[in-house]
Amino acid sequence: MFLLSDAGASLGYFAAALFGVTLGAEVDVIAYLAARHFGLRNFGTIQGALVCATAVGAASGPITAGATFDRYGSYDGFLMLTIALMVISSAIVGTGNSERRMERGAVGS
Image (cartoon, rainbow, N blue to C red; front, side, top):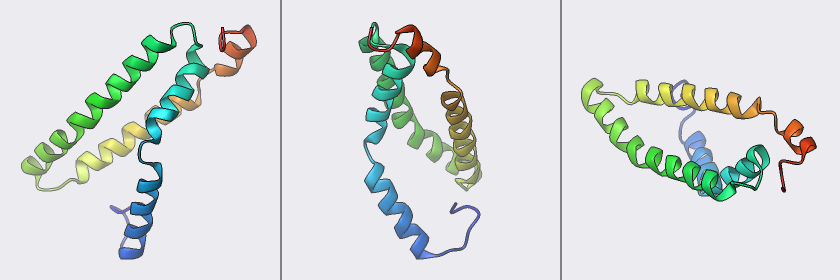
């Protein structure tokens, strides 16, 4: 939104508030989606792997963003790539077939 807009400080305040409200929710969402898509049989292993991947991304993201800025003098490319990857991953999660798994009894078994 910020890359394509000149809305000023009000949009920045809104984005900061939204970020603050959702901070930390990703771990809860990961647990919910892991249980819903893969069931509870191997939930600990799957949840551990997903949270580990989240931590690796959280640790490497700022380093990669800084290196991109040092190389190109702007965060624009990094942010556009991040947006594209988030859209792709959201589409993958959104097209998951959890309903059929629930019918077979995978969730909760």
